[in-house]
Amino acid sequence: MKKTVLYLAYASFLGLSTSVALMPSDHYVVGDGHSIEFKSKDPSGSFKTMEGEIDFDEKNLDACKFNLKIDVSSINTGNGMMNKKAQIEEWFNAKKYPEIKFKSTKVEKKGSDYAITGDLTMKGVTKSITIPATMTSSGNKIVFKGTFKVNRLDFKVGHKSDTVPDEMKINFTVPADKK
Image 1 (cartoon, rainbow, N blue to C red):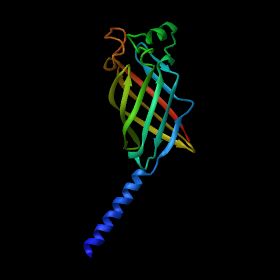
Image 2 (cartoon, one colour):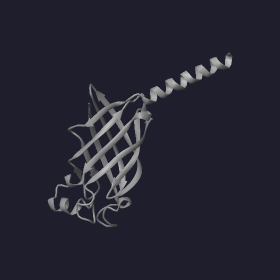
Image 3 (cartoon, rainbow, N blue to C red):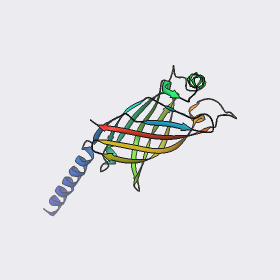
Image 4 (cartoon, rainbow, N blue to C red):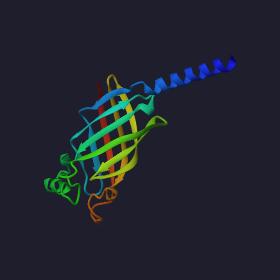
């Protein structure tokens, strides 16, 4: 009898913990005001067009998902000729690879911030990266902000150069509206 009660208690706990993990997180869509900036000595600029969806619940990080896309043709370096050159085959090859994509695989809490690990795909190359981010929320809106670095050569963007650094600093702000 004691074993039966113990097994029932264990099964109830297991069922409860599974149902918590399966509870849907809040669903958000990337909103206006996003910013994806890349900085180096030269070039620096931004991508103007981004879209995506975020499933986020700070009480259930296992259910969180980020699925984001940046339109390569929306690059803006402040120089029209440089914008066109960035889209040629040697650099981003925008005709063949029109989007930069990020799809999360894990979200962790790091103090008051988050570590968002996922697959970054650029120019047909996918690498796992971890992006540190802060998150603020207000009403039905959340905003993720942060800074990280990407080595462009890891993604075959351009070639080794004395004028363009290998590592690019990325600053981002991603606002999302609850749907």
